[in-house]
Length: 169
Image (cartoon, rainbow, N blue to C red):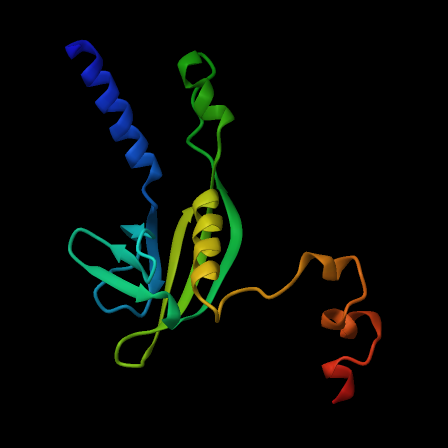
């Protein structure tokens, strides 16, 4: 019985860590006073009202309702230093390249001043963070419907020559 408790607890703890909604990011820049450029941080997304950027010394909470813009930059591919060919154990380093993406978030703080922050994170984390922000923030949400690319609807009259709102002006 004792032998089964330790592996079970280890598996449960690992599952909880994987299920936590956080991402390791690098704060590239912005106008947040407490953060230094190019510093490492953790972005917590488990609060349904706000996202939280935390370093060992400082913490900033950004309510989703205060976010006015969130956009992704281009994908950047990083490769490790080349190893000599005789180092066979370094083969996975040669095959795997890490991809990161920058995200710029604009929001207003508690005093009503405009704030921006640019974060660099892995490509998959950036996509999931943007999806979370779009889900919680009505200002950032993309109101496009996938069917607008295939059919003529009242939402896409401007693109197919109908009398849309832009054409009427």
